[in-house]
Image 1 (tube, rainbow, N blue to C red):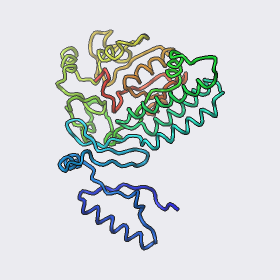
Image 2 (image 1 turned 45 degrees about the horizontal axis):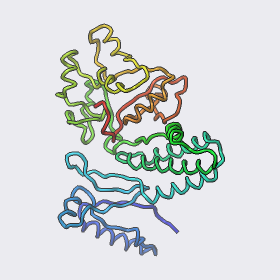
Image 3 (image 1 turned 180 degrees about the vertical axis):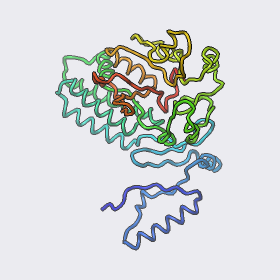
Image 4 (image 1 turned 30 degrees about the vertical axis):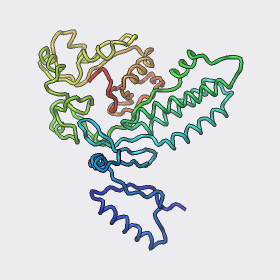
Length: 341
């Protein structure tokens, strides 16, 4: 019988951890309970673990599994320690076995029906496992799902082959690309205010003004960046994004698009009328899925505006309701290859 769920406890010193483990074992013994010997571990983890393990010649610090993720003590920018979460391999293999069995049961269902089911499976996987720095594992899961689907489709008939062209078309149509739904912990409760509100100076860790190489909209761009220097030289004001950014982002897009909103008025008048915090882009509704795929493949997060102040993620492949016409976009929190800073 299972009496308690899993738990992870952190201590600054090893002696404190050992003391707590002994006291906890003694406390549980009063109720005739014990800690599971194979699942109870005491390991070094944190900002000094990499350095200490290297000095002792032990290689990389140990990892641990918790809530479906393998937690890895890694290093981010400027050698800062960061906890990397990867989908557990054991959980991933079990899920793929379930998909394989279900595909065999659905072997003779219509292909669109199979595709819709696989899309729901992938989207559900992305919703939970779509944490920062886990995009590689999401992409590997999608590739394995496509491999299983290909094998199932080839078993449907011995007369008709599944060509590479048809396989690629099915993959593009039914299997959404990986998407990061969860922000970093230090950005989850961050509040963004516009212009020069006093609340703008209340920031979370790492959100200080002037952080170089900044790609996240929660932080201010560097005040001396080349883009803002050119912008101030022409408009003599501050902004987050300018039309030049939109042109660079959509330079490879085949569908038509336009600058809209306040920037369009300023460009028509040839003068700056007010500060602009965002860049409004207008497109044709018929091109919504193509533009959605274009932005997602470049690491952008898309959210539908349900009503003023209320948004929800826009799942890939889902058509917007005719009553919805606004989509809010921002660079993904863990994507580092986007065209727009």
